[in-house]
Amino acid sequence: EDQVTQSPEALRLQEGESSSLNCSYTVSGLRGLFWYRQDPGKGPEFLFTLYSAGEEKEKERLKATLTKKESFLHITAPKPEDSATYLCAVQSTDSWGKFQFGAGTQVVVTP
Amino acid sequence: ETGVTQSPTHLIKTRGQQVTLRCSSQSGHNTVSWYQQALGQGPQFIFQYYREEENGRGNFPPRFSGLQFPNYSSELNVNALELDDSALYLCASSLSGAKNIQYFGAGTRLSVL
Image 1 (cartoon, rainbow over the protein chains, first blue to last red):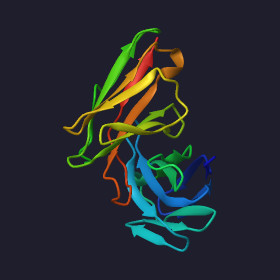
Image 2: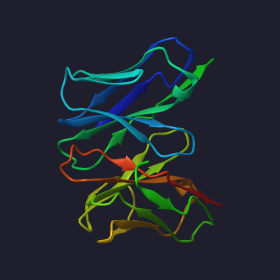
Image 3: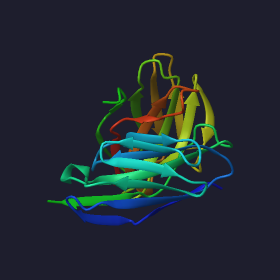
């Protein structure tokens, strides 16, 4: 069965203090790995899709990378508006359509 | 703005009742997925509909059922509500084959008393 584990569960950063979030996954065959951002009481907002090991995507202060076992979301020089829960999800080649989500990492950036 | 809208935003029901949640997908998206998100957890896959037929289901009992309509709208129905059904229910629309990116609505917060 597909499994996704995110760490840490929570992260408190000072503004400008860079850090990384980890997403470890077990899947029979990877169709795609997805990163989402979720604000309290809102639906997940799409950030990145990664499809193969070695792939990298960037958007503003965020950069996502992928290996065969895990993905990292790097936050460079974060600002308070980057405070959110970051969710990782995998889609396997065996389960068309189903996203297996991790529990998320709650990030708080203080001024 | 994802173009995916859900209604209602909040709902309170009592145990044993039935509930219908609605979703309007992004125009042109032929696939809709429903997820249940408990507080502090990631979304859990309930089922997916593609061209008005269920084509995948998670570990949820049959009292969770759905419909998808030709006008890009869909419904999630839950019968015989239980206290543990209290959660945020999310719908996500996507275009089959288009890199499988799912776009989520803001969700319906269901409270079962």
